[in-house]
Figure: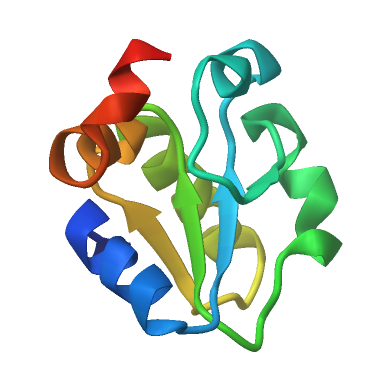
Length: 105
C-alpha cells in the first residue's frame, strides 16, 4: 500500500500536481476541520467506487490514518485501482506538519 506524508501532500498542492483528495471521515468530523477534498464517509466508499478517479493519484485520508489504510486495503482487494495513497497520520499529521491553525477549529 502506498502512502504519502502531510508534507509531501502539501508539496503536491503547492506544486499544482493533479490528484483527488477523499476524506472518509464522518460528517461531524468534517465539520470540525477539513483540508478540502471530496467527502465520502468510510461506510459509503465501496458503493461510491465510480467517484474514485483512476487517471490521477487519489489520496484518501481520515483522522489518524488507520481508517484510510483499511479502506485502501479493501479497495485494492475489490478493484484494480493502483493509484491510491493513504495520508500518513491523517488530518492530525496535517495539523502537526502543515497547518497548526486547524487544531483550534
